[in-house]
Image (tube, rainbow, N blue to C red; front, side):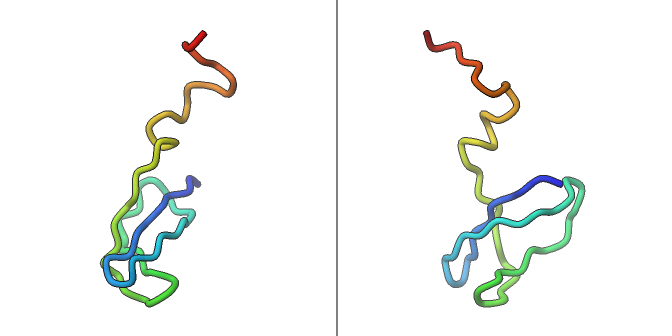
Length: 58
């Protein structure tokens, strides 16, 4: 199960959770309990999967 980063629209906290890729359930903020959270995309989300240690920068 992958780890996803989320940000709370109410209190501004950011947190990570494990959840299935196909899950569509709302994510509750562990700090304030608000359910209007958004997934936060990090550089790892975009760059992951290219292999550890591989680089095209010489």
